[in-house]
Length: 366
Image (cartoon, rainbow, N blue to C red):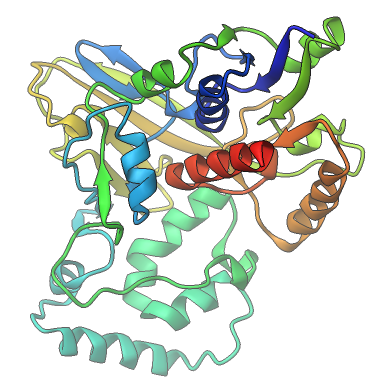
């Protein structure tokens, strides 16, 4: 055995695990089927703009230890995520806050907003929501739902809100303050120079093979490492023997434009169902860029099928039950560590991925 760990996936989980173990004197081989490292946080430099190739990634956390950990590998700027929502010819601030309500209803005070929302909820008379539409209406009232929730959600899921289960939306935060900061976390920012540089530093000291499928490689070299860290699709590892877990996928349409500023904000959501994309990302604004050109990406949610790139787990009752079966099978694998968004079939923010990787290292070393 040439390596202590064979790590399938050069994304954030695999890279953090490799960095920590390399620091402990372990030998790590990292494989990735893509032609680049960094997984979905990969950034490509286009005209000096660090383009988030697989969707916007804003690092945010309330965990000081995780913030200090990730800051070892990059300097972070003070970017604050403050998306804009476009509905027809109207623009609203996100998340739902007093700027949103003031624009929507021409009011000024929190009490006025609360009264309008409470009145709309009472008029609907929904006591036991039977679907996502009724659940959302019972939380935010008709106006916010119709303009800012309904179309966006239907595009994300590819289904009518009334055909989606209520439990998908447990809450829709309403903030009765004039604050457009999307996250409540204490720490937030974008790494200056992009995320790829972070992963490059994390992988220093490890051997890395790109354009390499883990399953093909394992078949050729079954004894290459003492243990495997697997961050690929959970059901794929077990050859889909219990069934196929479902995902939503996303198609990105990227454009380089010969103008300095396209939309004036990094993230603009389009909440009408009739607009086929969910949002447009203008990447230069993540780092306050002043380049004479700009790069935008439109995001089109799509149905997922085997062979497509999986992005968001569909965490409904059917898939959670199936995932639980696979997780039980994973526990019985003595020389495999399953981790990351795909390896655990969970949606993880980046700080939670880092935390989970560090916990996996701790468990290995104890």
